[in-house]
Image (tube, rainbow, N blue to C red; front, side):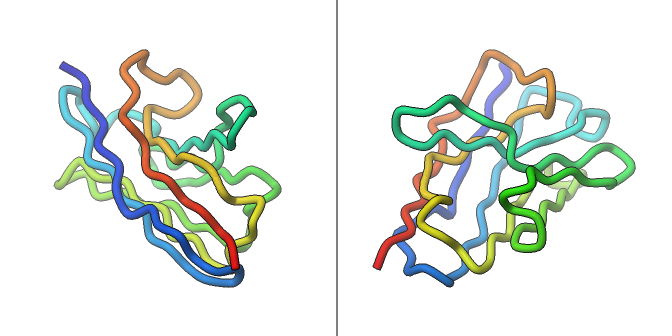
Length: 115
């Protein structure tokens, strides 16, 4: 069964940093492009960052220069390091396969950026 478990979200002040982690199971992790998505309240879910099997990366313009995605194929994990956080980054963050996500979404992890 495909499963994604996200963690690391928190309440943080503007300008702060967070590191999100996700453990995937039930998939052949190393062959998949992996991504972090986010869904702000009342808005659709969007792909924020992706890392493909050769470790090349993609970032949505709004997070470029502030966010780094990484993966550990030995541990089936994907991480998202977020720096210089802004209130606009507040959302529930999810991981899944990038571009063609599985229907099985995890619970996500809440990131709230507020003073």
